[in-house]
Image: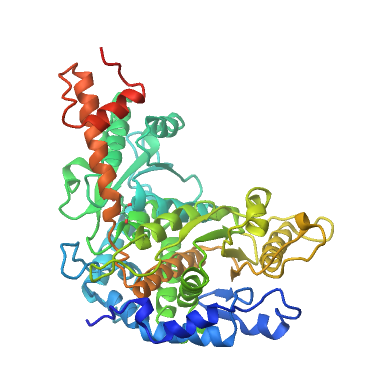
Length: 541
Ligand code: G6Q
């Protein structure tokens, strides 16, 4: 496939957008946020509405963003990605050289999927999982006492933890009766200890998730948990499930009750809808709910191919992000879900976005000329309002915000108090924040003055369900890759995490030498030895 490797500042529309950015739409002007604007500045698809009247652009800016989408070939590249183009690469340099096919995990509902082989593999794994879950449901797979499994521990880190964990928390209202999932990710021994403490291991399955099958944290935690089973007189093989890349060091069915596979064309941080998330979610929520997640994600993937940005919230969100970052100069984005269940979603996006787009070279291996991925952070509202919103409203740094909300609560249990329900209170706060950031407020007291013109978007759906969660996940995945395409960077590798790993191994070697009371060769790596000494781990005698 021919992709567009033109840099953002070389696209014809770049100059026009730069010019518009010198005088962006003034949200504080009287009547600026008019009824017409509120109605018109809305993009909808797959159960989501993106309201963006509170962004600093008008019709000309919006046209410019549509042109930016068109000129960058973002949609062709997205389609190329879904169809199996080798997009994880840097031209002319050694790189991962992989296809990027996470969308195939949910491209299972169409007779003619974009990539037949990958969709076939996804279906094959799903069938295997369906059979496994049915055995659990029917009581065919039980422990030696004939009892059903109630708990599941997910051991994994990074992409093998964050996305799946965020989705699990988001949907815990839909948990099957007597099923719970726990997570161990950190190599901090307290992480495993705290989880193990509360479990009846004889009724607990363990999913070890590692695409590479070689991640230090995950393998270490697997050993800790295996040890706990042995100590409890249980055979780990009867309880441990592997989720890994085919032919990885963990692909050893002898050691596991079952093995499920993901493939090298699925990046870790994009893997929540592959077996990486599916086995755990299937255990907790059941197979049907899992399929609903995939259906929602697939519908959003399809919407992400829509050319008109008003019908493509993922593409529009990506373009608004570029407008705020590259043209208006705002370097961070706050993701603010007004849903307690989305507690871990900002953490997932921190990884998915910053690991994907925190890059400084183009796909041609040249230094990028402008800024790429912004800093992503966030917390659920309204809690955030009582914490860091002061800075959002009056700080010297303008932080564009992405609010996420739902019209209905998940449990439907609510209280009418002082004329409103809690859900209404929640949504009222969300909309109020967006408006307050945009319009600001004049006040003679400088300390009570709100400058306004702080851009935000509001992403709304009816209810956080398996279907909409799938859609939300896919929306942000698509947003991230669209931005990467437009910045002409590779959003699918993560070379930046390597150096720290290498140096951590050097420190581990030092610890080993200290433990053996071996000869310290401080000539070779004086700085790491000195740091270890300064950190108080030994004293030179
Ligand atoms: C994600 C990254 C990274 C990865 C973890 C876990 O895109 O590649 O976060 O998911 O390092 O890797 P394994 O699944 O191989 O253990």
